[in-house]
Length: 235
Image 1 (tube, helix red, strand yellow):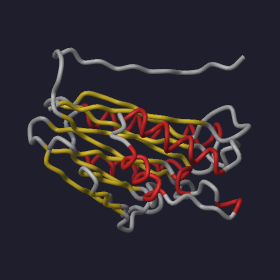
Image 2: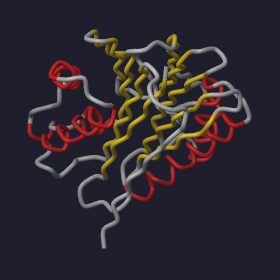
Image 3: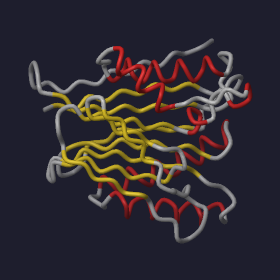
Image 4: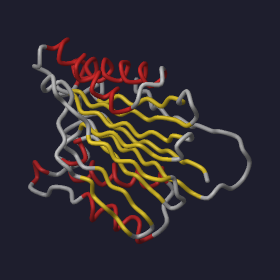
């Protein structure tokens, strides 16, 4: 098997800096973790908050701290730093080669979706953002590594897309329409979801939007690890 990871991100319209921060790190016992944080509001202040959270999380993960404990520690750090007045959503997707599982840690009211072939399941258990109190706990989902598994995680820019026009995005139906029409590569799926969300806001996103797609597929080709990043620079 092999893991394929794709991300698509765009800033809120007319805001130069995204409040969403995403990092990928290798786990000390094998595998990798993807960390996505979305600071409250948008712009530079939100970016500072999401970076504070992500730095805390990846530092602890690199030390071998479990994902759930890492999320709780990041929440406590944010609560202490901001006196409970600022929150931040957090998603961690970890491929653990030691346990041969994928661990999904969620402090995000926005749901995540898990797809197995044509079966699409929304995980929307109640979840509280980091920094809301001293007793914030994450929602943990653990899945066995299996080919054909696709996980879709996003910031609330997807959930709220189209609301100001009275046409909120139906994320589950959009995912199904993309998957049923074809067997999209992870990047194609992430790009399609983001493009649809942006179109619902008349190509002027009302919030920062981040989409993360993680897919487990049968191994093909060589054993080289690859990562490609595209960062447009304006001006």
